[in-house]
Image (cartoon, rainbow, N blue to C red; front, side):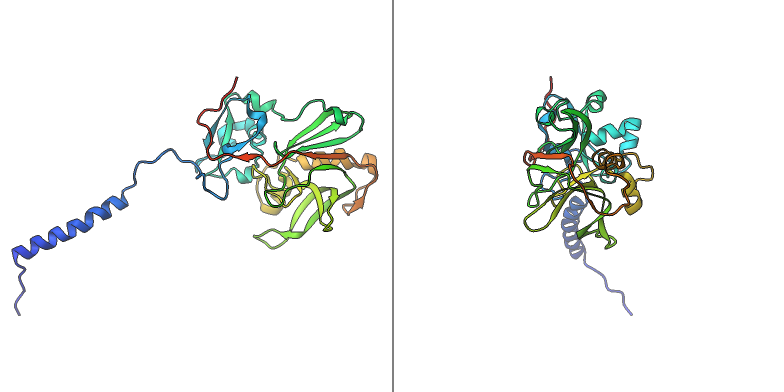
Length: 296
């Protein structure tokens, strides 16, 4: 049996042929130099929160920060993480790697931050008055016109906007769940703890202020969501150390047992509930975040 021999000329041709193929492959496999990591302006998940425009931030200096795989709000900001979360209208479940957040250059700006006025004249003649600013994604609770509670909120997204106008809290339900929407992962009805009903539409759909996730942007089907990490721990097993419970605070303030008697956790209609004013339109979502935010 003879071993075949390849002519030298054939070897040269084949060597050149494979070299031509190998070079492009090597180029394809080698990463090119890119800009610093950031969410895509075309991303439908809208995880770049630095692109959401809030008028109240015009006088505050801040910079975008891209959350890396080994980072969390706690690791980045220590005991100051709740202020950064509120500044971004964001809960810890949604502060995952890949999200870009706003970080104030001075932490004191976050600590004292509230986009709503300390005194609101239309609320002066009311014992209790709730103001929801859709543009700012924020809720304020007033007593005789003076701000008592100030919370970030998540209102209805585009296509399912929260109705604007004047309403009144007319029911409470401590353990309410949605009759229309479910938790995708488990199939259970979506929890709406500490629910305060403020409107029933012509289509018989009720609108509530209640506990929910806050992803840092308008996200609901029309209701108004507030922090409640105890609900998140019960339903999603995260975060392990609940700290933000704004929905509970508002529920107690607006429909507490001191004023309305024992709360058995069932749906209960209320008389003379707090006035609810909802104003504004959805915040603008910019094509890109500024590299440096202007300030004073």
